[in-house]
Length: 377
Image (tube, rainbow, N blue to C red; front, side, top):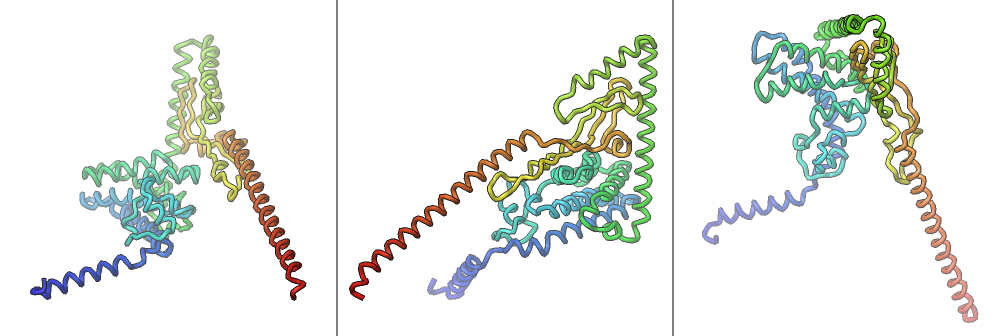
């Protein structure tokens, strides 16, 4: 080593660099998260969304490929942008503790946002649906992400599926942008707005056409049932089939509603949004008022075989969101919280008594010392 001064100098320089690197302060999460995360999600979603709109009708296979990937990327980043409005921590993958700590603003030895592991697109859609009822419908999101995955992982593109996925993205973003607090012009670009408006009109018209087709099919099924059983027996058969909806009713998730085609009771599956369980049972948090909502999700009529999903019921009368009484779980949680509150209050009172007792003993000791020393003063 003594005969190799250059090697010795290099080793010392490396050791010095390692010491400095280890002594350097870790990346401070709060500043980077505040400055980069929200803008990255928004800019990425907007850029991908515009690329999807501009490339999806291209005749070049390579451009359709990028449009298929871009449509899923735009949706995933936009969903995460909406989630970040609630809490950035929700974007972190469940088992990626370091990533969730960094997203919470905790100082971590991480160098870039690209090292953070996040939830999948479908997981992001699930969170948005729970936070904002009616936004990011399951089937639309699944269609977009399925197309993106097929293109990204298998190089597979179907033009009809691509056009449908772009329409799905436009419809989803129409509900998502107000949550994010952005305008369509800011997301899609001013030049693309005429295309977006046309897609929205077509989607709404297609929904109305679908509803009419579903109603027509249900009316045909109703007439077929009358022919099979005869007019005299139809009333009894219809009543039995209608009663099946109530018999299979199981909990608050299910209820009965008159069918918009045949007027017999059908079974309505509802999405229960249990916002009343959002509080943490500790003396530092407080429960809400137990407010819950039940939103229509699926409807089935056993008489005329009509089947409706949320998107269709959203534009029909008789399928409104209802407010529910507090759940049993909520009431139990409140009782537990109140017990914890009482225990905490009792503990604080005991501590106050101990402090008061200690101060009193100290005052007595001081008074005694003063009395003992007074003759000598």
